[in-house]
Amino acid sequence: MEQITDLIILFAIGNIAGFINVMAGGGSTLTLPVLIFMGLDPATANGTNRIGILLQNATAIKSFNDQNFSDFKLSFKLAVLTLPGGIIGALFAVRIEGDLFRIMLGIVLIYIVITMLIPRKEIKEENGNGKVSFTTYLAMIGIGFYGGFIQVGVGFILMSALHYLMKLTLVHVNMHKVFIVFIYTIPALSVFIFTGNVNWTYGLALAAGTSLGAWWSVKVAVKGGDKIVRYILIVAILIISSKLLGVY
Image 1 (tube, rainbow, N blue to C red):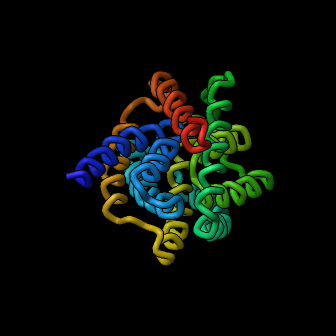
Image 2: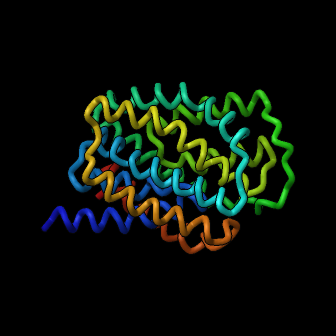
Image 3: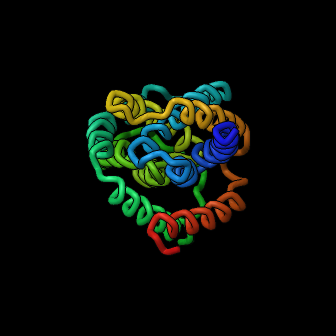
């Protein structure tokens, strides 16, 4: 009975996380700590979370394509650059000690809260030419490592890189983002699977929720509707990060 309750919670949290991840980013700030609080060790929670990430982005890619938002050639070019970092990051993640990972996760969560509170310029409708600069190449390699290692908040980093380095609109930023994360998640998840750091029961329940959340997130106007979610997310992150860092 307790496990059924856990699965229902994971589906519900996954639904919210999937919506947030596609709309902006940061959904793993909810799912990863919840998995840890349900008794999974940090490495297994990290690996299990990748199942939801993979299926969520597969759903989002199809949904974007159904609405005629796709540029697979450019998306694949950017995604390939993240693969080496994604694999290396995942190898680091399965070897790091649990207590150290909790501390690092708590610090990352607080940093994300701070960046979310800083006022940002509204993303305007800009027409990017799709040109990939050398700086963008380097950014993708680093983002791949971070995503493979900890994943939390990688959506925000990708959005900043794609918007400010390539001058893409918000819709196109998210379109490329879900494809990039999908591609590097495949080898990263494989590392966690081969090292036995995946709980399939929890992972599939979470994935069902994230996939549904991703589907209806794409249907919503990507440019708006996330303000209330963002405030709720900030409160949730503060509570979770405080617990991870042993503040209470």
